[in-house]
Length: 228
Length: 251
Image (tube, rainbow over all chains, first blue to last red; front, top):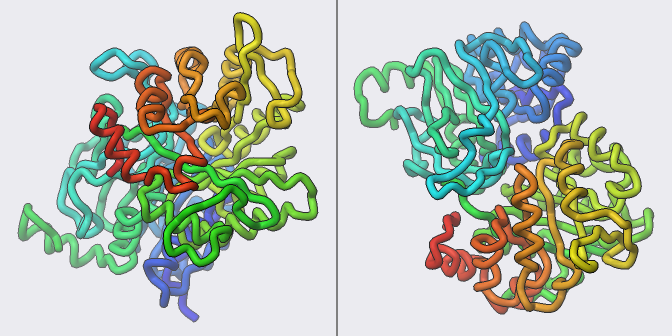
């Protein structure tokens, strides 16, 4: 049986939510949670979740011999990074001074303590935890059917800072604008948790399981308004 | 803008939700999956399950519940009650919990909070603090408020933050069950003392109490059981009320 979607398991947390949410939006798909490089290589689509600390994530990726297959998948097939699975796609994380995969250019930084207050002077807590508005910075097939400014569920203390703004697909405010979604070729990655974001999250996952990045590129060249 | 969260809390024993629940057309009032589904549809921002079963024989039941709920309800799930070891945390996360709440065991063995957050990340470790006013300060109690610990609640909250707790679930034992509102002074004191989010719990009787918890108590989330279970108020009703009073919510 061919593998439609591989959810990469590198020992970092709750993958059941991710696989169950994908099965919910793609009941006919063969979804496997796996740490086997051969299975990941054979899958048509790859979901790269993750939680915990960046250093531990990178150590587990290397301990399981997954680095190359992740890099290959991110270059060749529909690839969805979630939370830590977004952060480690970049070059370096401030968390534990960790060298990451370097598939995308940029760094990962902590919410700076001195900036964490709202315009009334109230303290803002870290982790950034809860439902926040996601603003779409570009049209993209994964945003189809999702309202601009829709709320998604976040829980994180670090955020990505891409070197080039052209990969920024979405941003949120806490209290300053930070990148919460990036898109580059066949890669889409999000800081929030679509698997925990109720209908909006399921819509995004549903878009991912039918996404054809090749079609996207040409459609978006044609129109700045929508890629639907 | 980040929304303040409303979190219904479900007490579970022997695989059933035990507090009275008054959803209309609910065939089986005690079925956790059905109740979770209803709360999800009503707009709950998260769900918390507290396993109040003491015996280890029933531990597997909560795992089955979490698995079943996590397969159908796609919002964050917190599970607490009887978490004693890193292995308990792992089993709950594997079953589909997003966060695990640690209460008595954090007092007995604070290292558990550090070990669990080091292994699974602070984002999934909630420390529950039951506090009661004693003289001019608040003291931490365990075993549902029966056992005094001698620990100062504010100092304890800071210690739990430093050991890696990602969030604190703060219950006022003085107010729990009274319907007279949160202990706002306590909530505010703890929220100001730490940088991590605070869930206020204990004492909610009216929607204004939820507003007060956020505005006066500076809580990041409010947890309630009976006002929602008994159908006095709906989640959507609570959110609309909070919004009318200037609080950012997810509608």
